[in-house]
Image 1 (tube, helix red, strand yellow):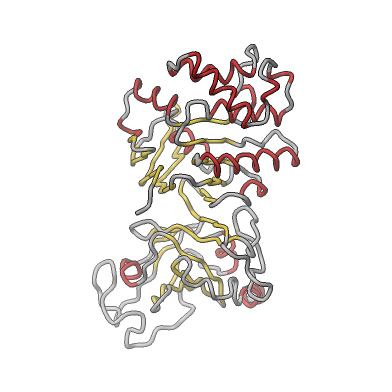
Image 2: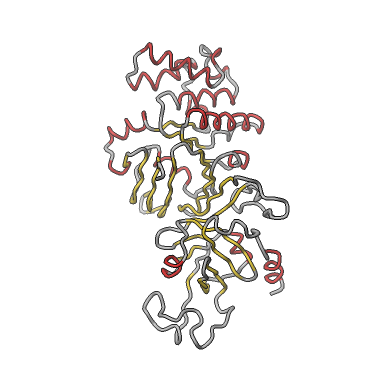
Length: 388
């Protein structure tokens, strides 16, 4: 059984500004196992920072469920929420001013969260020395933040975040103000902390260098988890490799495998690349095979008079498909809902691999089609669309 540290179930967050309501998260689902290191990516306004604020106890959800280390955050009162923020989660922000108090020494900055927790002086001083040694700054305990480089300040920020031994470390663009070399050092260091200390880490980032070293990269689109990219156990061979990169952040297909999320009622969001290559124009036909589902542009494939699509009734109202024709709706950003029959016949288990072929999009249970050449017939699909 999975040891889940984080569970988000149909998470919704709506902000109200005067008479205006802004939906930041709309039914987001997420599961994180203990010990994972995960990157969260997405365009500005997609809901990344909102998710981190909810997980960090800085904000409360409007609806849905969010559980971290057994704490149901929607049910915490203010006193419990304050304790949660101090003991269960640690934060590393992009701006050093949010991580460090400029008038305190480095050691005092690391001491402070432990003092607030009520740790004895002898114990927190020992813990601070240990943490500064771990982050490679043992000789700088008496310096102030302004005397450190950007990379060194972020190392101190990590020590502060880990001071109270949190279950979850949240990092919001921790390398956003660093150069590429320092970024590589900080991310490698965070990976080392993840492996050696077992701390679970969620990083919001726009940097492909960051996303390339984590266990999973989750993309958020329009307030929902849309795709997942995981590191392959073995790189693909040159003859079986993905030609392109992941659609979200550009990770190479040779080393990473990208899949999309399907929620429990069959709602999913197709990658932008699929929408570009296969013009669905708002409606789609669904074909349910033995081991995958095909989505085709509406009306492209003629149905015979014997009800080729299905021998039964429509999934909505039960009209015979021998006399009626059923399609699914696809919105402008690629969101659609699979028929219930597709979920019953194909075991997607919440994730699907996307294959783009001639005038169709194929959805396979994640991992089942790993032996199939990814992106098959993509060039043919592009040619057909360009020649319309």
